[in-house]
Length: 159
Length: 404
Image (cartoon, rainbow over the protein chains, first blue to last red):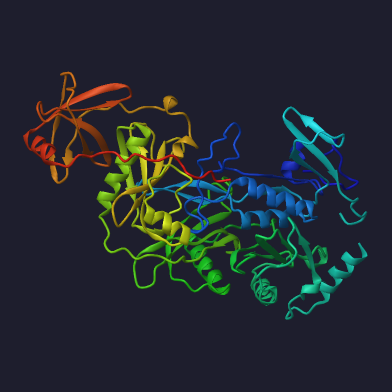
């Protein structure tokens, strides 16, 4: 995601700088392991169980809920660090762990989404999936995306 | 902006011994939420403050980025205190279900041992009011989080049923920062109501039945299975292939747990070590009271490479085989597999093979990798095969619920 500070533009927000976290108000989110989730390209099966009653160990909610929470908090004006913590707390993504004692028992464990970049970055633009076709919506094949501009970030807040 | 600066100054001027009042919080309601539900924020604030005071680090107050915030979507409420302590509560019950610390990203020195991190998790669980008995399940350097610097330790505890050794599937889990010993994310479960079992089948029986169910579902003929001691689960398996009975569905609707073996079954014909993420496996959930498999999670469909691409271990009949408590040898045979058959379970070390047995010819055989392997058991083994129970599979029903 890209913030709206005067010092940030598409030109100087090169990916290498994002990864190094050297740009103010620029941050990227990601996982460094496979996430057990139905949110995988080309995977539309609905076989993923989850078990809120048991808490955690069978399966949790789908990653879509995590993304929804993350974007929701960002859209509401939260900083990246806090929005990410809230999403990881509420809808913890999971990966599989593997028994290391020869037992062959597999288990699931927490896999926080990670943040690289500015923990104080805030959101500038959010895109939302939709089937809308009005002029405010951009079409990408079967996808409709709305570009929603947020209020200008006050100058001087990004020191 | 003026308001924001005023808030920041107000926080900065607050005495260290006083917790920040609710008025200092930025509150964001999302998804139509309009209140905090049953979350008692007034109790959360002193707790957050106490944890903030106890934090083994400080963010530089000169940066004045310190902001208190609360956001809620009607399901969960997230509270962030002085940019350091975070809580998450369930709106409709008020229960805390996660907490953590945001630590400074600079000057990390991940020196704490795994044992020290385990102790820290216990401490923080008690600090936030947890009272359940804990049984340590896992504690390991979290390689998935940071493969280079090992910044985190993953710790998992189960709750134990009062007065018993049986554990619950729920417990606490934490990703612990190895520099400070603070949980970055500690998930806190709760003990559901549960039905104590009248009796418990042996783990061997549970694993054998799980393997029969897995073989039936996957078509694998050489398998390996392992289980921990049974745990209390709410039998919520309707979203996966399952054979839940009325009693399980009733428990699910009541949110009640029953004792379940959670068995991991691997395709042992794949020549990859345990722990290789491409190794195909399923999880089978076995009712510990009846020994019946009641749910199957087809993990191999969701992670790892396609089976056809994986290195295969050629099957042979070498080694010592067991049928029940009888052991013996099986010699390879060039005879054609007979038609008549009884499905039997043969065990060789950690491997379990679902084979066919023909009482008339005394031959056993199986299909692995599209090829038939016929074997001739010795006399004792043949007797045991003739007397043993059929190892029939367990047909799974399709999932009855899509998990949307």
